[in-house]
Image 1 (cartoon, rainbow, N blue to C red):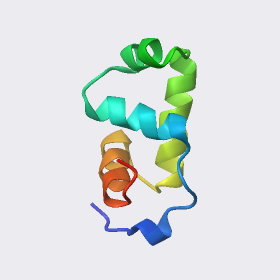
Image 2 (image 1 turned 60 degrees about the horizontal axis):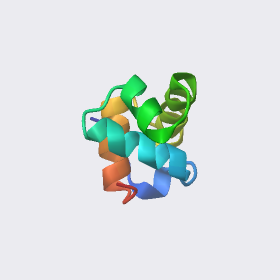
Image 3 (image 1 turned 180 degrees about the vertical axis):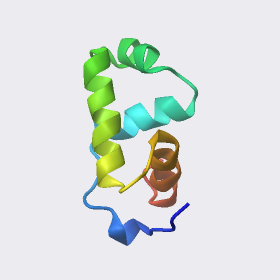
Length: 73
């Protein structure tokens, strides 16, 4: 995994992105996250994709790891 620090995060994650990643970390599927957050599955996918972009991550697992490292989770 490419090591990037919190200083390279493009911008802060919003609350929806953080909550989506937190629930993903707990093992919930996109559909389960959508139900729990009372949002559409499309919205959850968007939040996770947006967090991945902001964290300059290669995949969702990498997004979670970088969010933890940056102090978001």
